[in-house]
Length: 274
Image (cartoon, rainbow, N blue to C red; front, side, top):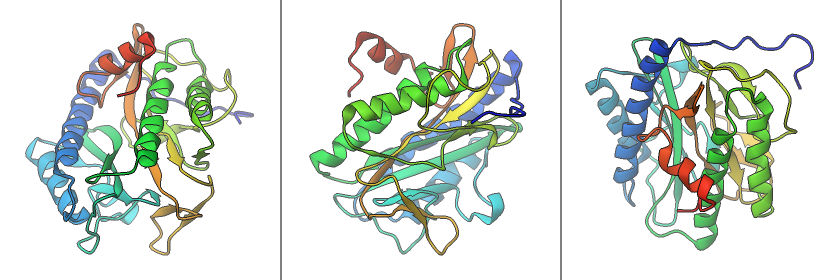
C-alpha cells in the first residue's frame, strides 16, 4: 500500500491545531443542529440551507460548496446512498429513512470535516444496529490514532470491529484523509487493512477518519450526477466521520463537542454502545 514515496503529511503547530479546533467545533455544532432538524417531511435542501446559514453566521465558510463544482454545503446521502449525495428540494425524508450528513467548514483558512448518520422517525432494529456498529468502528479507529502508531493501525481497528459484529460490507475506494489547510490532503486512510503499515503518527498531524458500512455488499456505483455513490445492491448504508489531531496525550477529536472524552471513556470501560 505504501511502497515507494510515502505521502507528505502536514504537521501543525499547537496554535494551528487550536485554529483547527475552532473549525471543527463549528462543524460539530452544525451537525448537532442538523441532527435535531431531521424529521419526516423535511427536504435535504432545507437541511443544506440551515447548515450554510449556521456556518456563515458563525464566521465560517462552507468547505463543500463549490468544491469541484459541488452545489451543496452538506452532502446529504439517504438510505442506499453512501456518500456525496447532492441536497435537493425534491428529496423529502420519510419515516424509516436514514440520512448521512457530511459537513465541512473553514475558519481562518483551516478546515473541519465530520459526518453523522441520523435516523428519520422510527427505523428498524437492523438499521439501528448498522448505525451503532459504524459509529463505534469510527471511535475504534480514532482511538488507534496515537503518537507512535502507524497509519494503518487506524484502518485495522475499524475493520476489526466491523468484522466482529457481522457480515457487513466495508466500502473500499473511499476513506479518511489528511486535513488542515485543505479539506482533502495526503494520506488516504482506508477503512480496512493490516496494521503496522504506513507513516508513523506524530503530534501535530491531523486526519479525518470515516468508515462507510453497508448492510449488504461492499460494491458501489456512482450515479450519473457524477457525485452520488450508492450501494450496488440497493441496501442501506451508514457513514460516520470525525477530524482529529494527534497529540502527546492521545487523539484530540476536533469535531466532537467534548473532544471525544465520553466515547474514549466508553471504549476503555468496554461499553461503547449507546
